[in-house]
Length: 187
Image 1: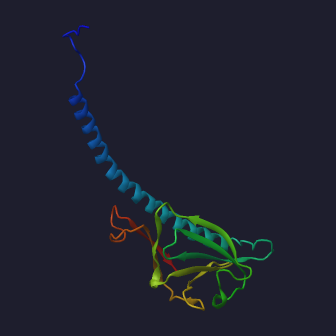
Image 2: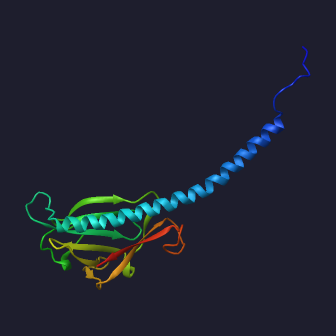
Image 3: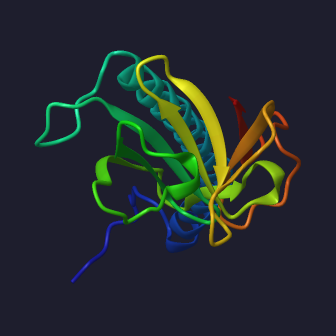
């Protein structure tokens, strides 16, 4: 068998060099993409939290009816530190804030809003672990309740922030490009 001296093609070394360069470029592109993807997840989750609070307030004002009854419902938005979801709860109209529970008679879960993958509620106002924003129908007057103790405790009126963050993020809150976002809540 005779081989021609007229060879065209690439040597093995040239192919390995080309593949190595492509691999290095691929890794270099993946690292920033992963960070921007995490930032986007946190931003979208913070927007979901804001929309959930707005939805509960609107439902309380518009006269949301308790499921299977003909009475207006008071609504609550439940935030739990470390949770990857936010829930809207319905309470019978006239429920006293001092007797609110998460699983009491007549409490109905209207909606559960899941946050993006690996995103959770990292901090709540006044350092509480469980916070319920309670909207009284039909005027949607809001009371922030600390549910950590045996009896719910109303937090002082004002403004607080729910911090939404990527799991394990330690950067300052609301830093441009950061993995933690605050959602301002007025109560």
